Length: 490
Image 1: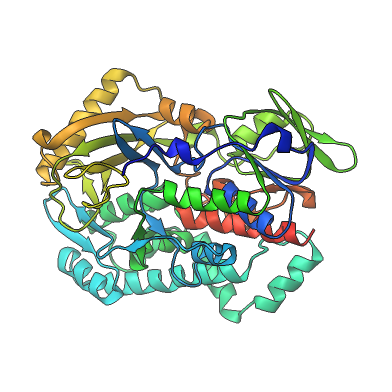
Image 2 (image 1 turned 90 degrees about the vertical axis):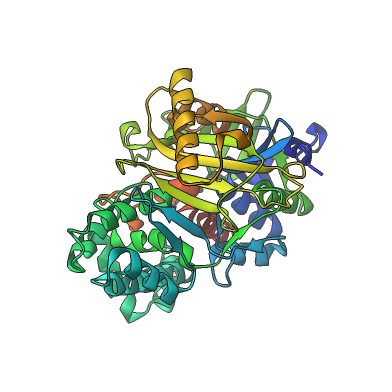
């Protein structure tokens, strides 16, 4: 039975709230939820503040016209053993009703060619050679696989990277492997350079394919994404991918329930108005109705938002200017028929290859999301951070419908209802600076050791896409796991 997700979440009663907490987390996206849930599990007195009426941020769900739509993220990665989400859920004792996908995705090129992104690596290389030719493909993808495996393995081993104290250095020394230093050199080279090294520079269709694939998870193109993290972005379909009955809110609810079950407090529809560094090394968090004091503060909101709240009480951290960020146009619909077969995720390139649209559809029997005989569909594309009026939305909606018809995903007559969201809607829903979503894009000037840091070694911590730009759910969950580990040591 379809239920409105808003009924799943209830703020802690005012009489139960404390004036002071061990940990205050601002922002209820997956990074903030992860930090709060693990900290509460470890016995910390935790308060999570979320401005919306439903947590989850860019990986949540909402109810409209009798259906449950996902906001943003629709692909779930990281449930494999040894990966971030699996590790977190295991520590929390959460068993998700996740269903593993068969083929993670199909890509529709502008030429009309359809590529299946097989999870099996040998099958994927054979498919890439079939479409783009044998030359250079095996060399390119074998290196991507090795680097991607290294990224996830090292991220879990180096929990406290970059180090901020002597204990972190000891932890790094204990887990270091000689080959790690060799792999790190790839942070200085863009994916574009490896394309050239494999003799693929003049393969225009392949380069367009790579750019559009990188935009899904790294939020940028081959010239700007470093090879180390670019490999992880390109290979996410070569790990098990999952879907959740009921949508992403199923994961969000599990994490929120864990916070509450372990004595943590959660407030929804609570906007933080000001942050002050209080005496005795604590933080004062001002909301409209109350001031909360925390021994430790975790910012799970974009740095741009955090800086605006911080005022002049501490040095501000800056990573990306507003004009270098991007947002998304999202088309959500209820449809009668899906022409994409058993594959739930499809990427379709537009004719001039300037952009692509990522289509995701619910399972045909997911009655937690919509009524029998119907399915919920989401289609997204990147958008520059400029204003969009209603005419822009309508025009883009028509482009999506036409692209879907061209690729036989659904027909116009299959539409029951649809609506479109742009940067203004994202800003209203998440509160994110300028409505940018999808994470801070990867840039060659941003290195891993510049990101995941604890400001001046104090009791202020950052998580979310402020520390793992453009790497989706696994990255932000990983950042929350890392912060929770630091908090446990305090």
